[in-house]
Length: 187
Image (cartoon, rainbow, N blue to C red; front, side, top):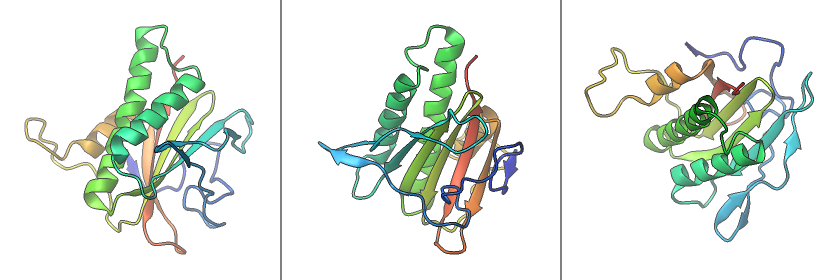
């Protein structure tokens, strides 16, 4: 389901840092550069009731090949968080779904905006949240009607089908938007 809620329904609410585009300032950008590969400056605990969420940030500033960079960054986070190597087919499929959603969100920022600025991945025991921020003014939506046999136009349809929820957040202070998507963690 496409939404424009700043966060998914439930008890988590917006991030105080403004990482979801909510008022309160811009999200700090980790993504220190080492040998051309963006790595997080340090894993962080996300605020919230569980207190055990982990957050990774990737800045795309002055980067090329951003889609493979985002996938590699996400794959490393999944290894660090114990999603990979996957012990079962279900866990492997869940990790592949996360990587596919990352690819689609970053690709859409490249195709329909001026490219992504920042990606934030948050994982807790129940949900993994992917946020991609860009300077674009467009409104992402699945192409309707979806035509499976035609090239292109499948990105947001795929996101919609794989995710628990997704949406778009705009900030009055900064041009652009943050597209977020949430997937369930493997059991």
